[in-house]
Length: 609
Image (spheres, rainbow, N blue to C red):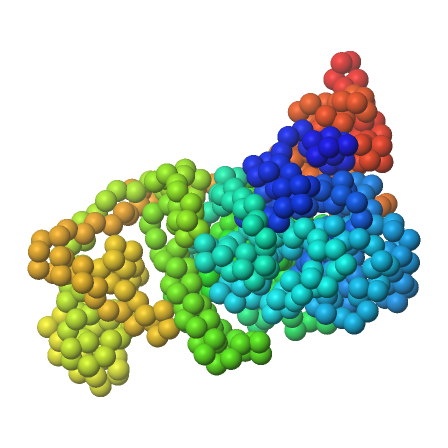
């Protein structure tokens, strides 16, 4: 069996996604490799199929227990021999896996990176040849990445300690060029094949909203998506508790997840979400790295993350089966202050000395500036993300909030000059720069204690924009930052002029800003509803639910929403036709095909009558 036959027979795929074939062939040829592929781009198959074709065992280093469980469950559902070792297993489960290892029953073994340094782990492998060492979420090895995990640094020593050095294959979805170089160097990849397929996820709709009332806005978004599976990310544990309780009080089936909960509650809540008993997961970033739930149709960020890497990884939990999905960020100015606090007071990494920590903090502030620029931009949101990761793109995408909003250009040269002049005069008067909130007070003629104590009411720019709303003044400032006339210190949040500001102040440069062409409602959400109002789809979905309960597997492992929609479209009547559906391999067809076919045949017969 070759990779094409394995892809079709075992996983039900009729073709490869970009980059998959090249990476598989590299692994089978004994060549180290690095795959940079978007979430949902099929990274797992790149090492799972070679693992089945290579002799011996493949070890997969995975950062989270939840990811291991998902991957192993999906592989077993497809009839493939896989297991994991993790700290959440009871003694009986642990012994069963060790016995299976000694008997050579498994082709893939998932472990956390910390297990590689445990004494006796090599002995537990039962003398098997390790042909492939696959490293998932490989960006965790880089201290310049957003999820540095020192235990990943153990991987090269473990590989060297094996009797035969295995092929090393590293994969990640979020890595800038600097992080890619770090991965290659720190994992000691040997002349690796590097495949970067791009970061674009065309099925995802991106939007940034700045509501006056976040709780009300979130409730509206969830009400519009009732019955669909989605994640609401919050920046802090306290926010998770408040948001989850508020949603539950309104009758929304939500559960919570953060590192402060007991292991038992986290496991119960994750299972409730995975098995669709609860449709909404409210969580900190402790939830979701590598989460393999394919029917997540929306991800809403209640707070802005600290970096675009983190945002894109978390938003990428949506639409993994290729269906349309929404990624919406609810932004407020206070989010940046919260992010700065988390950067300064986050857990210190004992693996770094003070100089290294200072460098990491500086990197964190640079990432925060890119994240806030994304939230403020009036340009294509997808383009912002792709530019950050170094991928060329068109000026517009047609599938983000900014591209969909009808706008006209408004000349704001005069208020722009007033703002830039106020920034310069305030810094000259005080001897130091100040932030947007205080500058807005000065421009609007506020009699606040701070304005008066600092003597800012004596500036010539005091009150020049007193007839303009506070929100509009801040929008003008955001536009000046976007155009490069103002810059904000990421750590302290103060505003300063850039050299380019002189063009606006002295050389006649005009400034314009896109504004809404009408007060029309925001575009409809991109995500397709769970049922589309189709009774056949609902009937097939009910079959999947029964199988899910009987097999004790999440519904999306039985088959994805995309596969259900193809059943409705193709109406297969035989097992051979059922095998032609995307995502249906031979084992799944034998195990689950009959009840689906029974409904489809009955439906076909009733339509014929």
